[in-house]
Length: 298
Image 1: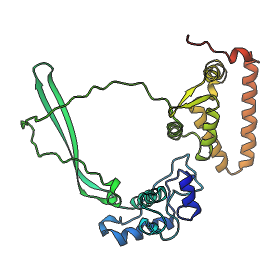
Image 2 (image 1 turned 90 degrees about the vertical axis):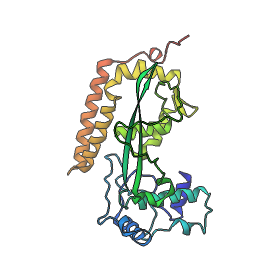
Image 3 (image 1 turned 135 degrees about the horizontal axis):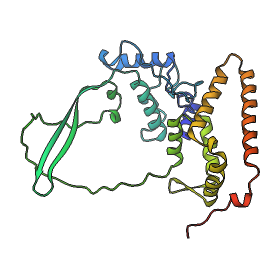
């Protein structure tokens, strides 16, 4: 983020604390002009490509892109930054993805081959493989990392016999789901439609007060187990599920978009306070020692 902040302060990219995928008319025009000047006419769609933001995107900002009405190219940036610098690599990525978003789709032929192997011990085993031959690169032509080659497969007909020249096997085991890291947790929140980019930092900070950030994953402290299993779930289960958080986000959006947002806000707060007060009266005052105690597994 510090590298993006530097590029932003130097006027090279737009505001970077956003997850919007919407481009402004200025950005679309600049992208299409670059494509027209540097690629074939087939690479430029007849109409601009438009992408809609997710419901929880930062609506006030457009997507991260090169700034200005005419983009600084990565080649021009080499006058200031070396090709192996983090600043150049990040800017090149932002530039390439922005341009690629306004290019034509790639076209290719995908082929799948299923091979039946008859083994004396294991019986019939079906092995499958797929490969794509690209007939037109489209948006993939903008950058090397978008133009990886897919393996081409031989032209076989149903019933053809083939000779296996080499075979290998791998042992694989089903592992339990990985613990969340700060990054994967934010990705999950985005998937569930919870939170905003501006709130993710405070969410992670709150969590790490009762979780240990160890080996790139969040591991609960004993106090976290006590709080969740003896306090939050028994007393506040309706308020800590994904559905409640998502509905709260949607309700706040409705208030913001209503004809009388101030009145809607007051009504919502009064209604919410009453529900919380009724909830507190229902459960009374729990014993704090009991709530923060948790049996150890040894």
